[in-house]
Length: 252
Ligand code: GLP
Image (cartoon, rainbow, N blue to C red; front, side, top):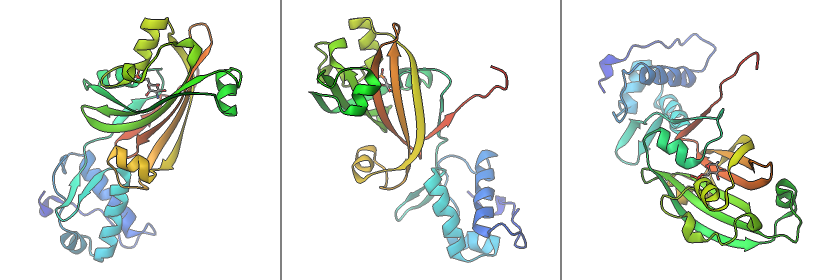
């Protein structure tokens, strides 16, 4: 992108720090289409000159935008405009596979671990089962068109889906579809929370991101058509690729 296309809207006399104003400038340039996805940002030196600030100030603005997932830094090559984040609408109860299909993308699933065990106290109370009952714990790496997007740890009530195996859940298979087709368990309602977290080294490696970048931690307890709790899932979504959107109405 050419440096002379920049319109400088920062104000050195403002109480808002310059790095923060520069962040806003760059964000606006991206939203308005002046900076297109995939294009390289001008070198730090040029931006520092343009905004009449130190290179450190420019670097700080860029680092913050990289952490937000708006820019991508490629070591030794430069900084580029990232593709827009996935907007995940939280008003509807959908599966990962459905979310991807709505974006015309193919959902992928790689089973990292699969075990049958007794539930923890929290799981037995969330799933409304006894501590002596069995649960299936499955950790899956979920991808969109082959790009890793989320790491999901799902705990299911074993007696509801007898015979479910690790192989059933790999490649492009959908847990919700399998539950419905094989055991007539239709996920009908769920409670879900979303909170921020930082990528652990393990999550970072699997999801191909830097450790400690912001991530979105989603917890879902899902119930079937007869009100039985069927699933407890903890999902770690890439904070650099996802934003959650909720529609609000004043009168329900
Ligand atoms: C989402 C939910 C999970 C659920 C999964 C099922 O990702 N956060 O709680 O287990 O969808 O997706 P699929 O049917 O594609 O396996």
